[in-house]
Image 1 (cartoon, rainbow, N blue to C red):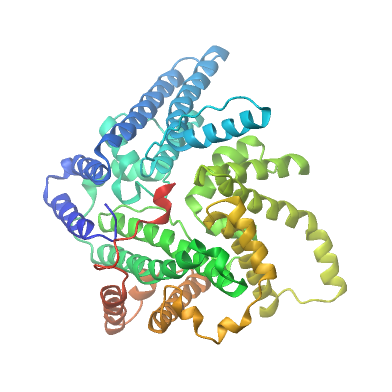
Image 2 (image 1 turned 30 degrees about the vertical axis):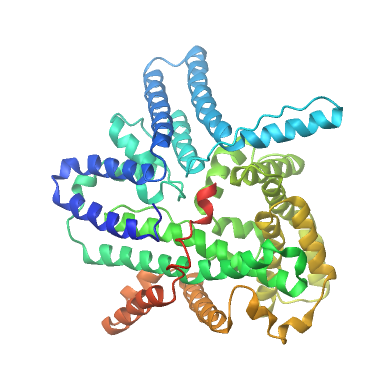
Length: 501
């Protein structure tokens, strides 16, 4: 069930209406049933997987809680580690089987081919369960937090099952922490029936999310898909524009899902973490990752980077930890070497940037460059955006060979005449569509600039404005979605990009 589908437009009001009408103590049961229905609308059989992950992590948490009650000794410490190891093995084993089986088999066959040994011909061709990477990491984070003593083990199996499967953020995040979400789910019966600011604030976020998805992301995708699906036919200008628009597409696509998830949860009185914080205004790649997919980057920081030693070690070990974290992050995104290279590039950017920082500072001091002026900061933003876009080529391309071809063509295939011969309007978007996209991008820039400068999301900004201005913005968004959204007989409701991860 897609957020941008008629099915969800019916499902959500029904869920919310019943949620507030039924007895308060039954609210979490209703949310659990609704969440499983939401997930089963894709493939009913895969509900067994999320149920399995839920049961294993719940039992592991309860077992860890029991072990903490007995006198601590080396033996109980070992038992606790075995419980965590078992939980990790089962959950990661399921994830690896469903997501990486063919990838592992293909690479194994490649190695056999190099050695001149007969290859294994079988392919698994397993359908990837929607959201498996997200709910697996969320459930594992809970188990590790219980092991570390950061949260108490949840006693109520159904409430814990709701934590793992809560439908607004189930299939594409944000990846919530147990300390935040379980605590709220344990008190859903205390949520007030009507809170104007909460409900309208959530609705504004959902509207803005739908606008980003249907008006911007899906429109940009028409140009991006046209160019990348026939990349060998185009020169530098088309490929650069397609790559920049892909950066816009993936940001609006993923940010929109998080906004809708946060807004939908807020309508029901539950606060989810912010997942994006104007990432394209970042002045370094390190800052970019503090602003992009915050729930995942912080998950890797807390459960992989810091346990590896983080920065509390030698420079060489710190760089190793950064590279491991980003290589694993790349592999998390997809079973392809493209994603591994994409993650490795982001890790390499940070390692190289750290090594070159003293040289850069000395050079700037010698040249007496002002670091606090607008042009200096703009240069940092543009440089970071350029580096991120180089990496996006590997994310979007179908193979490493295709990615390197595109980067080579960008460098060698200059064709500036396409900027004036009208041929760009034949690449999925005509003149009218380009103008719609341009105006929409201006709106996106203004909202993100406001967020960057003031820290206020659109709902908080509108709350401070006069009533006529609030309704003007809301109706503009609503009619923008209805009139300019990409849907209808010629288009199917486009799935969110991160569903595949």
